[in-house]
Image 1 (tube, one colour):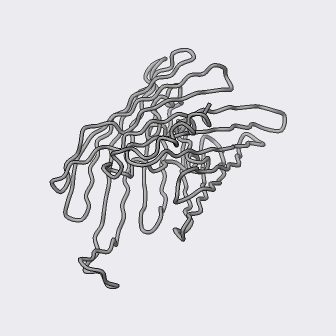
Image 2 (cartoon, helix red, strand yellow):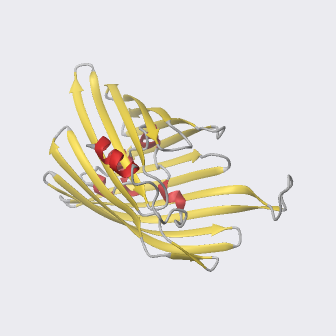
Length: 291
């Protein structure tokens, strides 16, 4: 099903509004586990699902998660999220996220020496709620965003909507509509949010050799071409997992890998992401604790 959706969306090419999207940091993976599994956050977001699919929060145990990663160049990402049950049906989550890039070179004419350097900073405050309704999960999220690039700044807000279907205990299908909000003004110009459709699925299987899961995800952003990701996770024991994945239609990367360790309510996840075109390799870490 995912391959059929991907083939159809890829044939449509890039949206006519390509290049008009603001806040591109919203499309970055959040969480080492998601990154290691080919960016399949809509079905593998876990405690950090507030950033990728709010419906995935349904039924989650109370937890606190935090992470840091050095992105390509001088870009860094930091985040913290908390999840808590709100009665027998609802689950809520609050999160903060920041992305910053320093030492960006500024030139007025072609030159080997920059005139100056400047920084870019993005910050978001997120809230989400989800409900489990039998075989269905539904979730909605709201985020407030502030961005500053050198001397210019902007503020905006957007909503996320997610929906999951569990035909059986080992299978899940997901659809989400992310980053939908009103246009944002910056430097006297109007920019649209990178509204994104996401379709994903996940299949789990338990055997005497361990637990296996296979995930796939397709994303259709407003301001870029369709991309997809696939991930495989194998847990030979309950406290250790090995992960691998692949990104499709993503020029910056393709192979992804990682691992996870759990002990006494703590979970440490690691992702290894080689970059293409001499972008370098990123190492990502996330730490979570169940409450």
